[in-house]
Amino acid sequence: MELGKEVLPLAVVVMGVSGCGKSSVGAGVAARNGMRFVEGDQLHPAANVEKMAKGIPLTNDDRLPWLDRIGAEIKTAQDASQGLVISCSALKRSYRDRLRQAAGGRLAFVFLEGSRDLLLSRMQARQGHFMPASLLDSQLQTLEPPTGEVCVVTVAIDMALDDMVALACEALKSAAIKGGFHAG
Picture 1: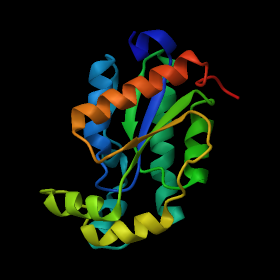
Picture 2 (picture 1 turned 45 degrees about the vertical axis):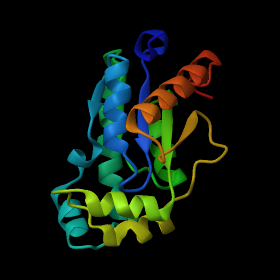
Picture 3 (picture 1 turned 120 degrees about the vertical axis):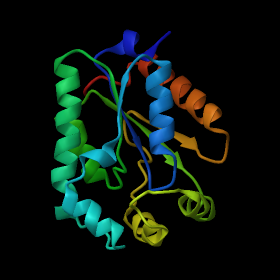
Picture 4 (picture 1 turned 90 degrees about the vertical axis):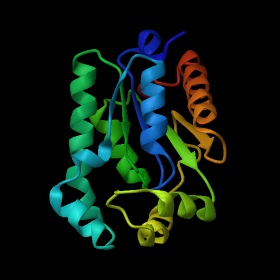
């Protein structure tokens, strides 16, 4: 069973702090299900990218226009009855709720969770990414884990990428079968 065909229109946000693998897992989930993948970082206003590149954490006010752009991408895909997978840190519940509102409630999240040490080692190994490892602690402090929220599946990042993608797809299918993706 493919996600996109079973529960369209479906949007999936792959979320977590920087370095957790949002882009890689998101692209993998999208490819396995014939859905489009959007790199959420590409939707950041230039001022946000510049700020983060300088090691300055974003504020709520910085993030809201970015979240609205991500929400607009989700809404556009849903209006066209197309499945979409998009990466977005979505660190706070209020941010996730803002995205849920844009999606009319028909939205799932894949939360990529890992230890600070593993996240830091991944961030330090990245080449050419604007987000410096120095911002990891501010992201971890901002993070409100989505424990108990509707339509959220959690995947540990301490495994191979293919295993993470497979686990995310299976968990999403299970939630879809249970009817977990309907507005509620």
